[in-house]
Length: 254
Ligand code: PGA
Image (cartoon, rainbow, N blue to C red; front, side, top):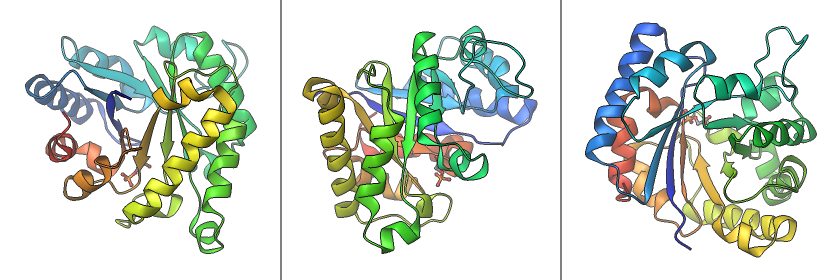
């Protein structure tokens, strides 16, 4: 379907001014050398680095994203950041509903849905994350959990242009464990089918579904060659230029 591959780095709560800026410069330089038209790069630093990373990325084909946002435009929400503020910093993307936010901040799929609508209203693209825990997989509920999260978290007004899905099994994040390629393919197909029911076939066929959870240069080829895997959401390995770009290179897509 000609979906553009997205190689996205989720820096999480890592990086101070000096090393964050250096990392961004390194990614910018390397992306200039790679960067086939069918491949898109994205980095999502912590809020504190958005402005300096934006500067470091000047002239490079690397998009900027944040890791969360509030649903309101402004107001009495201590500690929160609004979609308008992210736009103002130069963000094009925002990650929503990451399992660390669902688990550590009690975020529900309904909240993720409202945040996504607010982000889209400001012209931000969202990366909406879903994924099962190990207990849920062991109970044979992985597909049910992921498709329910899709139905509840993705706004009805979403389109392939403003929404990217990330399938991230919670038990694969930061653990070095990854599902079998058959399991990844099964969940991605189920997600696309659910998206088709919710948003129509044409949106579902063009919407990108990333895989995330312990993606490294040495497993990228296997994962990214799967038919319904349209890129990767990368945590740990996005903190080193050679690993982040190595994933893109080894996948042979960028
Ligand atoms: P990981 O994290 O690559 O360190 O497993 C992925 C994520 O949480 O997005």
